[in-house]
Image (cartoon, rainbow, N blue to C red):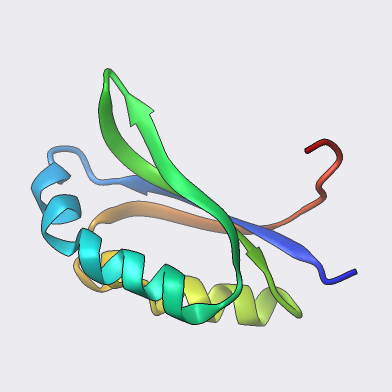
Length: 91
């Protein structure tokens, strides 16, 4: 089974407009990469405040490369990005 990796991103405070302005490019990156198993925004008080993306890829280097190429990252949206191995147990 191919390893899974969680990309956990937290937006900078007050950066919602950056997220909205870059969302189409981010979604294209997800769609075009072919390695995203699942993804969605983190929510706080009803507003998007980060991202959780689960990647089905060969290794940590590939997952980190995907995260580095995310248009959200290029736009300066994130305060933090963590890429860690993830083991699916249920679902």
